[in-house]
Image (cartoon, rainbow, N blue to C red; front, side, top):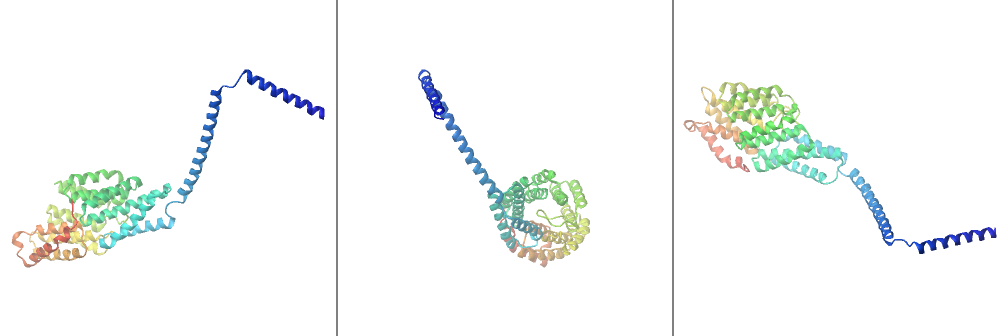
Length: 373
């Protein structure tokens, strides 16, 4: 055993002597040695950076998977927007506005954080719907500047969410803003641009808005064709987040309103009672704003008949003014002014007509508050 160990030691000493001799005759290149050292350092740094990125990926995944609203919060927000779709026309705006603003801010806070793909799409759609209602509320109060801002923001949400009812409703809001500020060609362009968002829920509404715009542009034939499309596509839809659906009452209201603008007394007389009666049932398609339009069409009918009844028209107008004192919309206020313009000077001496005119004059500042183009 000892001899064997001694032999191994002699062998190791010989190998070490040979290596020293080789290094003396062939010393290592310092440049290669520096290159090897640099490569080693890069490998160490690469491994360290990869490990850090891996840890970050794990942390990010944990935050993404746990971020966003819980299931109940999301369902509550969707329930809120569905309820607002039902009540935003009959409930006074001053009462509804804080609720809509609060929900929109809640949605924005969620979107500012990280949310998973499907959840983010649902929240984005909610954001667009709440902002649409803010735009509609601003429009109804005559604040066109704010209405445009909300409409543009809602359009951004709608494009990202890709939901046709919201997208078409935003286009309808853009069209309404253009229409009531006298930009009729632009109003029609907004409606036509929304063709790609065709959906049964909004078809009749888009055709109705197209009809009123054609009348403003002087194309009665196109208006008549649009009204026919409106009636064909109207239905008994439950209100959804977006425009109010067009049912029996709205079909009659739009037909009577268009006829009044065209001076067609027979058509106004035909459709106005249908609209007024249908709105009294307060069905799922009820709109307080459009009910007032129907009542004003009735007032105009009294003036368009071969034997005008200005006192009856003025009496109805005063009833609408009384309702507007509590809660008014820009379109109804505009329609009241159109009714007032229909009284020729000779009829303004009639006591009830004079009372209507005086009451309108007193109410006018409130009816035009916030109106900007």
